[in-house]
Image (cartoon, rainbow, N blue to C red; front, side, top):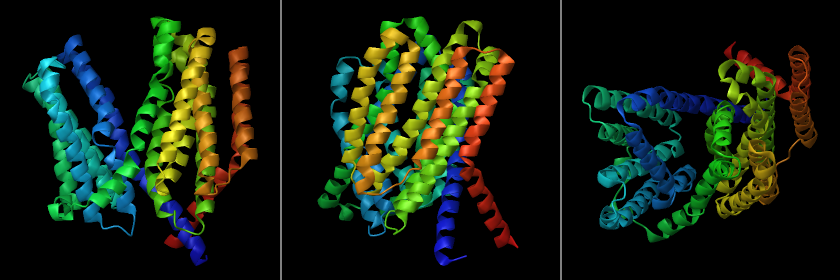
Length: 477
């Protein structure tokens, strides 16, 4: 095996290893969010839980705005081998602190208008710990301390769960206990990350540099509207459904939206690892080949995942949901494809980050948001929740195509369009078979045959996994 081949295989193995570590760190947090819901609903009134959810949602939306999304710049610039990491983290912390201080100035005004009532102080504390938890978490990630990043995710999950039980069940703090569990768990996370990265030793007033701050902000500020726009593209359709189709249709759409969660979780875990690999490989002479190969395997994996989901979708809705929700299956295939194209768009968005040209992220997200809004206005009145699913699919597909051609000036990626298009055709045929409503057995057989054809079209995925396994065996001999 040549040195070049060995280097390339190491790149793939590192990507797979990082994906596994991020998976470990993310799965726990997703699981605990479901487990704790019954606890919250039992110990908090509907009014308290509604208030808590509103405060957390608002804090999540405002975090990138108040911090100028500086944690995005921390990750990218710390990964840069030509940078002094101490200067990057110092100036990033200053920027985040300045943003929080500015928000503190309007505290009396918010208090005067009774915003969040007695819970306003918790809102501020949650903002503070969430901002700096993300700054130091992405600092660890940028340093290549992937295990620390993953362990931190598990630590944050465990402490949030344990403290929620302590404050709500045993100490009966009510809604204050909900907030203190989040605040203290994030504070513990910040301390852990600083100990493991020695970040606290790197921060010094002597390293304050206006030129560096400006460079960091030029990178991070365009990421703010991207974060907000992505959230709107994923959730804004619900308001259109509510207006045009009513609250019942919104309930059907909410249930249908739960199905793509697994594919979305898998892709998000991978894309966290991909950010590191994409930036590390950006200066490589063979980066185009690496990026293209990884995308080919990502697309094959997600298309096969969608195909499998389509095969069992009616079975899932018939077995696990009440009869009145069964019709919601019709929108699921389009939401699944929307999730896939969203993942492709995020994959290509990393090209902008690697090239430090984040204005492209902002521009393309705006296009997607406008298209999503227009399609929702046109399709939902005629097709109901299916129209919302089609809108999601087409808007994310548009962003994907725009980014593919726009980022060629940074990375000349090649997509195997014959495999890509054939896979999509098979999936749309599967959707058509579902809509025809064949007898159950016949439908399952036809769908399974189409899945097999799709797997054969994407056989390179299985071939590559087999080769990687064989190389590992030879090394272990």
